[in-house]
Image (tube, rainbow, N blue to C red; front, top):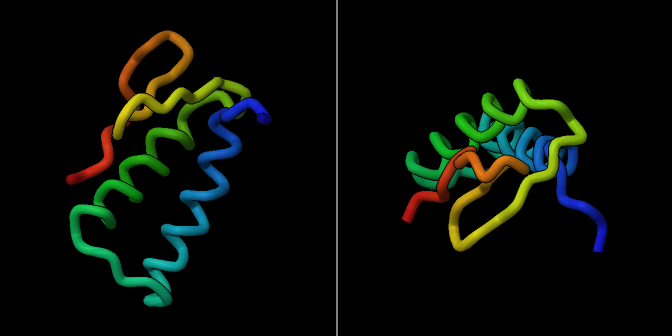
Length: 71
């Protein structure tokens, strides 16, 4: 499996955000907020920074919480 890094997730979630902004998809407000927050945080991180998923939470390589998926 390829390394999961900021670049990987940023590409996916920027696309999801664009689709939400354009009205192509319409998830609940919690998910829209999550997507916006995740993209904002990832865009400030180095692209090669590894991202780890544990449960519903995303962590950087130093074990700092990036964001948690809404319920």
